[in-house]
Each structure stands twice: as C-alpha cells, then as structure tokens.
Amino acid sequence: MSTTALGPGGEFDAIRTMLDRWGARASGIGDDAAVFASTRGDQLVASVDSAIEGRHFRRGWLTAREIGYRAVAAALSDLAAMAATPVGILVALGVPDAWRGELARIADGIGDALDEANTVIRGGNVTSASELSITTTVFGAAFAPLLRAGVRAGDTIYVTGKLGAAAAALRSLEASIDAGVHRARFARPVPRIREARWLAQHGATAAIDVSDGLLGDLRHLAAASGVAIAVDVSRVPCADGVDIETALVSGEEYELVVSASKPLDVDAFRSRFGLSLTAIGSASAASEPGIRVVGARVADAKGYDHFSH
Amino acid sequence: MSTTALGPGGEFDAIRTMLDRWGARASGIGDDAAVFASTRGDQLVASVDSAIEGRHFRRGWLTAREIGYRAVAAALSDLAAMAATPVGILVALGVPDAWRGELARIADGIGDALDEANTVIRGGNVTSASELSITTTVFGAAFAPLLRAGVRAGDTIYVTGKLGAAAAALRSLEASIDAGVHRARFARPVPRIREARWLAQHGATAAIDVSDGLLGDLRHLAAASGVAIAVDVSRVPCADGVDIETALVSGEEYELVVSASKPLDVDAFRSRFGLSLTAIGSASAASEPGIRVVGARVADAKGYDHFSH
Image (cartoon, rainbow over all chains, first blue to last red):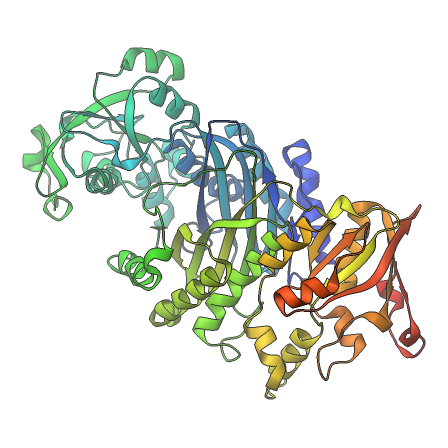
C-alpha cells in the first residue's frame, strides 16, 4: 500500500488500520509495485473497476462493509468472465474525511470479497478525496482465457442463476422502500469464479458477466463475435417476484452468460454449484451482428425495440 | 475500456473520443479483462496510483493534457523503481460534467506518457464523478525486479538528476506566481524507465523513486533493508535556484535513488542519458534502521530533526 495526500500522520494510520483487518490476506505489500509470479503456460489477465459514492451506491443503502465487499466483488466478476483464477488485487481508495472512521469496516468488506474469491490484496493507494471511491484492479491467471469473441454460429447461449433481483433492489432503495429478499443481490453479489472455470473446462467457448443487463451484454457478445444472437425471453430465468422486463435489463447481476457448441450438462452444474444454468438462446451467422428477442412473452412486452438493434 | 454510470449515449462516446486519440497506442481493448503475455523467466509487476483534482493538482495549474500526462507518468515511475519494462496500463477515470469537454485533451496527455515510456493502454473504466480522478494501474516485466529491501551495509547510495524544482514549482503555483523554469518539473515529470534498467544491469541492488521527498524515501529504503543510511547533504544535487532544504523534502520528483555495492560508472550514465548520477551517502549496519543527515550544510540548516528518526 502506498499513500499520498491523506494528510500528515493519518496516512500510515489508515494503511495500518486496513492491514490489521486483512491479516494474512494482505501479501507482499510495501514495494513500489507488486510482483506476480506466473505459472508456466498461464496467461495473466487484469481488469479495473471503480465504485464511486453517489454513482454506484449511496451511503444510506449499504453498510461500509457491504460497500467494500461490493466494489471488490464487482471487479472480481471480470475475472470470472475470462474464466481466470484470481491471483491478487490492488485497491486505490479515495477517502473523504467523513469516511475516515469507516475505513476498518470498508477493509473488512474488502476482506470478505477476498475470502469469497480465495485471493489476496497485493498493494494499493490511499488518498483524500471529496467522495468515497474504491478502484480495484484484479489479476487472474488462465491457461485459455474465455473471450467475448468466441461465439460461433450454431452455439447455444446459457446464463447462470436468475436475473432481475439487483434491479428490483435498486428500485426499492432509490424509493426508500425495504428491498426485502432482493436486497442481498444488490448488497452482496457473488462473482462466479469457480462456476466460470467449470464452464470453461466443460466446453464454454465465450463468456461475459451480466453487468450492463442481459440484453446489453448479449449485444456486446454478438458484436465481439460477429454473430446474431436470438434470445428466447420465455426461457430467461427471473428472480422471485421480478418480471421479465426487469430481468432483461437488470445490471450488476454478475451472473455469467456463456456460449457452447455442444450442450452443457446443466444438471451437473446445478448439483455442483447449487445454481441454475439455463439455455436461453442461440447464435447464427449474420451480416449485421446484434440480438433478436423472441419467445412467448414478447407479444405483451413493451420497449424491446430499442434494445434490438 | 468498459464504462459505467457515465449516462446514456455519452458513455461510449467518451471511450470512442479517447480511443481516437490513442490510435495504435490502445491495444487489445474490449474484453472483460486484458491479457498480458509474459516472457518466459520474466516476472510481472504491477502498481496503482491515483491523481485527484484538488489533491494532486488544481485545474488552473495545468492544462488538461498535462494532467493526463502527469497522472500516468507518476504511475509509470513505480515501474522504474522496480527496474521493470512497461508492458501496458489500465486507466480508470472519474469524470465530472465540467470536464467532459476536455476528455480528448486528457487522452492526448495519457498518450504522451505512453509514448514517453514506449508502452500501450490495455483497458480501463470511465465513470461520472464529482471530481476529476485518474487512477492508473501500470504493468511491467522484469527478470529481477529491484526491491526496496536490497540495500546492504557498505553500499553506496546514488540519486539521479537534481532535486527541488518540483517543490519550488508547487510553491509558486500555490502562490499564483509564475513557476518559471521549475514549472516543467511539476507539469511534465519523466519516469526514469530506461535509466532504471541500465542501473539494474550495472549493479544496482535496490531502488525507490523520489515521490515523498528524498529524506522520506531514503527512510523507506532504510526501513525495508534494515540498515542505517547516512546522507551527505553537501552532495545532494539541487535544481538551479533551489536551496538544499527544499531539495531534501521535495516530493513527486520521480528521480531514482539506488544502492550499489560496487561503484557505479556515473560518467557512463551521464553520457548515455544526459542526466547526472550522484553518490550522496552510504549504508551501514544498524540495530535501529533509519537515516542520518550529515555534511557541511547541516550546521546552518533547520528542521532536520523531525526527519531523522
């Protein structure tokens, strides 16, 4: 951890506070850069993601611990989308005075996310700021990273879990209503790290995590692969009490969308992870890549047009 | 580049604007994570650094292009401190509405820093924010990274370049005075990437970059190596018109401090890089690691005591 501009005295106190919370989950910290040893044959992948107060969360919605957890879990989900095994993270914190007293709780939440993904923090940066920001760089190793460009005509498209609860929770939080059973999906999303590796080992050819919403992320996948993807909305699994319209556009779900040329064993997946794996569509050759929404419920659904180009 | 919460439409425009400016200097962008191929035997090192408006710079002090350059150059300096060769960067931007129109200029500055270090941008993140922030993760490859812990008793301590102009410039900028010849050292610091590799190849055993100020960074080096470092202030090279008191504590200089067991060829270094390399002290065994300030000018200098523990 390095630190700048957090003011005299407090700077190293802030770091010590967090290192105390992390214990053995902080590893090899203290040089100008962290060294990542690579296993022969593995490729190193890396991604960065920011969570900013007032943009990605509000103070009243989440505890400090949940804020720390959620920021890091969301960043780790990008490793799941590559079917990479986490090898460490760096965290850059911007900390307003009003948040200084919550640093230990934020660090606890970061630690929860490290535990969830079985990884460690390798360094970071702390600076003062006028709004709380947590920018997480995640590092992973993968022998054959799953890319967005791997979808082929004829492939089946699958999604893990059920969608929509994150958006439903967000809607309740914004309206100051109790988010009930949906709250945990917003406050404590689970990066599908182990699930992604299983999927890659069992034939998945491309992957993306659901961060912009299912339709948006399918569109990214179609564009990167140069295919058309037809999604059957009658098959999209919705969280309890959530309608299909919400499920299709709910962002920050951190479930995985994958493609496969041969059928994936959805029963084996479910028994291994206690999580559904559902075929929701298929890819075909296209002169103009994009997505097409089909299925029984499309007739009475509104607003699909602007998602479909 | 991925993006969140920058608002509809504008999000991908922002990224396109920057990708246009970067051209071939943006490489392999568009997946959930960037893949870094490693050369066999090399270790991958990584570091993160944030530059935040109002903390690290003010809008009136620097152009948008200088702000982009300086943020990335400062982060790259951590690779120099490890004697690593840059292999790419990720940039997470927090962009207030008032800065949206400057994104192309900021991207130009980031591009200048990429050119300076002969590297590329491999991904990033753009989000709205209430203050401009540029958080840069830098990646480098090194066969044998130079660590802070490598100083041995008997080693000579060297510093590259001349110190003090960054602090002198900052003082002028804060007082709204023309920073004159010193301005460039604040606005356009140069990460000593090539110099660091030369030093590592010619016998340097430990390194740190001068970001907290010479005395502060020598203290980090001493603590990590478990030695005492005596610094001879009469030998510390000062920038033109800067006094030794300023030179000793001037931060964000991004010059290098290295140790070596055998004398380094300062003439060869100067003729290769057009930059001075100066022996300023030595390390000795110590029960309590720390620094000691000695030399002709110490008698009439004030305020050393609180630097010396």
